[in-house]
Length: 422
Ligand code: AMP
Ligand code: GLY
Image (cartoon, rainbow, N blue to C red):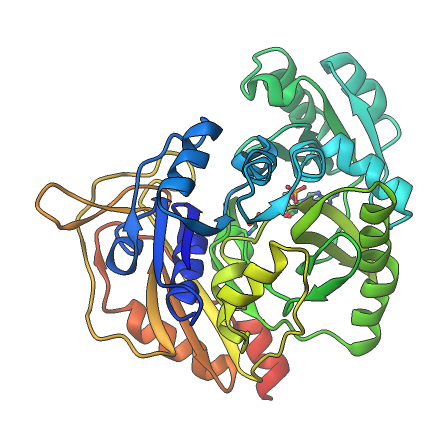
């Protein structure tokens, strides 16, 4: 079978790597891909907004499975266009993708499903935001309704900061149409968990729990980012795990069914655990980045087969290794504000199956050398018996990367190491 993977990040390199190991998949195309996917697949440029062009490519190359990494094509309804042409794809319908595409749609879905979430008001101006804020306590959370490439959530310590965030969204319109409306939401202080499930809109298969580290610097300091590192499986008490299933995951999947959504894909539930109670922060309708990089290596099944089945609405029973995995993100200088691009990168050679580098924002220059091409540039992945060992192995390989100005955290895995190893 031939497969097409859409996207260009570390998540997509991870999927391509798993597809390359699948007995079902003979050839992989990636659009647009990166310098890493170029080594094991064929990078192709397709205008992803032109659905007819994607369909034509799939027909021409006899593509038996399409896997879409990022949210934009999903929210844009690419799955509907592919399915209308009888092409198998993993992902929700355009309607169901609104769970990620609109925070207000998602909040209404959560309320209909009866899952615990922060209380929120819909606002659409500075005045309505400040009026609603009277019923909330600091820090104030203001979330633009639409997709904003990770820049749509403002965590505001004071009313003054909230007012300036509301001005940015509603007056300066920095987020464009994504910021026509927004949610003002109650702050939830706690521990974040990424809980991802494969679902056919009726039942689900849980993936190992992952923990993302959103802040740029060690000890969770510095600005928010797309994610500077992950660990999996996250170790939480059994009773809490079952509470999450019972109060959040099962009712969410039941609601998909009630709404009759076509959802052969991944439901990513962003949770905040407050005093041992789970609350939904957000839904995503795709695999996470960098969650994928630590989740996929723990799955023993053939990933190509798992997703080929899922694209047909079938859920395969998953089995997992007992190992721990860790991902350290290397970001460009200037990230998350204005990442420096085109920096030359020199990588060590000779990776092992359990410690390796995945590419994210990289490209090949005219001479075939690797250069940076984005905010998050490289991922170092390590898998071992304990988080301690995985972390040490990852840091050892990380030290061999030569890439000027790179930023990375050295504390990914610390908390889990303590829980697991002492
Ligand atoms: P979201 O895109 O909704 O997940 O928000 C991005 C990040 O903002 C989350 O990963 C959290 O770290 C933070 N966040 C969002 N909503 C809340 C909330 N109600 N309380 C505390 N932190 C939040
Ligand atoms: N790592 C969070 C996300 O993929 O949205």
